[in-house]
Structures are given as C-alpha cells and as structure tokens.
Length: 96
Image (tube, rainbow, N blue to C red):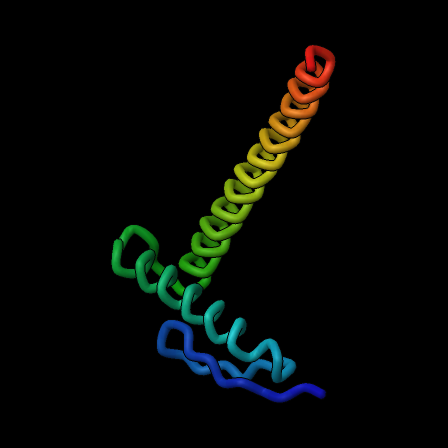
C-alpha cells in the first residue's frame, strides 16, 4: 500500500507517493536534494530552477559513480588480498 508524503524543495511543496517503509529514506533524499540545490542557488553561478535542478542531478550522479567506482576498487583489493592470503597459507602449509 502506498501513502503520500509532502516534501519541500527550494520552497516548493511536492506530494510524492511512497510506501510506509520508504518514508524515512525518501525524506532524507529530499533533504539532501534540497540542500544541494540551495547550495548551487546560493553560489549565484546558476540561474533558473531547471538549470539548478540539472546541475544538482549531474553533481549527485557524479558523486554516486565515484562512490561506486571506489567501492568496486575496494572489493577488487579485498579479493586480491584474500587470494594472496590463501597462497601464503598454502605455501606455509607446505613447510609445516
């Protein structure tokens, strides 16, 4: 079952449908979006709600991709370390 939630972004209210269990995450997402859009608007470099929204979306997408790439690199490092640990354990077992 869906409920609706009122969120406020750049002084405008929006009614958004969401599941009750997603309510807190949606509120946090809306707050993050509002904060980022306010930051871009305060910089004065971008004028117009649509341009602020696009720049905010682009910045958030960039941050998401950077985070995913970092996570993937970390997972690859962990896999490499696990493989090296197995090889070291196997080598030590031969000498025991």
